[in-house]
Amino acid sequence: MLLGEYRHNVDVKGRVSVPSKFRDDLGQSFVVTKGLDNCLFMYSKTEWETFEEKLKQLPLTNADARTFIRFFFAGATEVEVDKQGRINIPQVLRDYAGIKKDVVIAGVATRAEIWDSEAWDKYTSSEALNVSNIASQMSNLGI
Image (cartoon, rainbow, N blue to C red; front, side, top):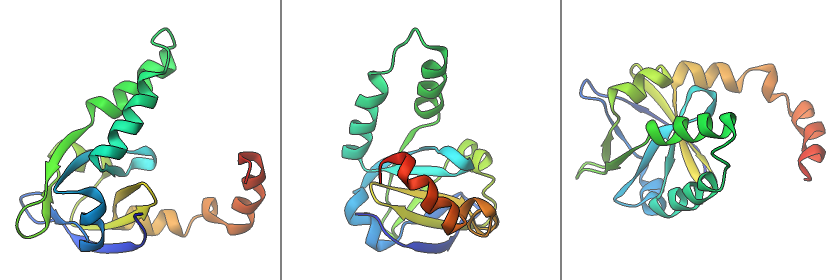
């Protein structure tokens, strides 16, 4: 399970260290794709296959489903961890997530997310993360 929040730097070549605690779960190679909320999602190959199967079940006759499928698949790339524990994030993905230099890599159970550190700090301090608001919405999700 991917848990925790880690701060790292992206070097001039677009490489970033993957937290060592995440490498066991993600594997030597894994998928990075555009995520929701302008971050990047990282999936192990097994989790990506599970997600892929769910996306394949969406009806191609539905325009929203096609858009959702394109969003995740066209933005996806397989990355490999180098000997220093780093991955190279393609420029197109760094641009999408607004990643400049400093990032936060957050564990979110079955995936990890890469955020520009300023965007993460803004997100985590926003009203959207008001614990009372979240708690009241949990019942709508069945929790």
